Image (tube, rainbow, N blue to C red):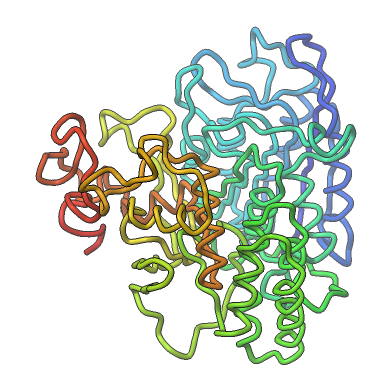
Length: 509
């Protein structure tokens, strides 16, 4: 019979004064151990190590992976300080770690990788909630590289979840949640398991992919999103079952309820899209609950964009979330009975063409081996999975923005004189508008159309502009030319939308 073993390590107190004391890891570890060890939820055999020395932790990790069966599920969790030496190598700090000789006194990522490689188990999960948790191995001090560089060994069947990607530090939740509360990442891990809200497809089981999606969405829409969770997997056999899901009392799925109660209007706007899908589904109970919630939002919601999207969903089926659908609520949806068009058109109050970008993975960031001009902030290149979204085919033009200014009395861009568009530039992209101006434009457009419009995320913009295969530019890897795009001083001005912007076609066209 397959075993389910979890080793949970937390370090908050350190003898070296260079390592500051942390407030949350012990509470994080205790909460996670409780839910994973609950026979009604995780049903893991849990070992909990708190503020132990490096020697003891090293031995326990080796024991976790030693002589295991192929079908055993092995989960390793660490919360504490992630540190890097002068060569960029990652270490997990322990109570007796000395920063000056971290290589001899801290737990190295390479040691963990070796144990993963040697284990017979094909179901190994590592969870890291620490600074530099996504910044492993071969970078120089101050740089960062990806999870794969530390854990891509000779073995198979491993999944790594980190509190942040390689370009960020993990933040302690006590800055926002109050002293002594769990960190953002682990807080939502525990929440998703304990409440069953991470059971996104409602089948009573929480798979690892569902848990990651739930945590990612909660972090990104919680208002505490100073980090971006990351997942990396290497040839895992089938789905990894993490926990049973306690039955929810709410009629609507838990992740939708969470989004509807979020202070971020973009999360509520995304929830409207989910509710619109539910009212078209076969589950009559859920459809009724979703319709009632949409009706409430259409009458009581303060944000005009959300209220308009809810009204549009009730009146015309599913609202179009254009400009972007936030990277949240990517639960499995039933396919529509009719195929969706690849290009959608809005004719009032302005003319817009919108392109549908299918759900799926893409390579985000730059590979310095291929792109010699890649900046540190673009590395490492890593795989990101996005739900389907729609985005404008062309930039918003001066004429389109002028319609918004005239209809609302909103301030005009500072380079316009006497409320007039610069002569001859009606079809040029509007410039010199702030993020707040752009959000006001989206809210106006949502109110006028009854559909939800928000700004694209960085990941959505990159996927739409560059495609899925990691190419350097939309047209491929060849250098830019005056025939392909407007750059540097070859034009010295904006150009009409759709002219010389993608070198003659979208990625993949």
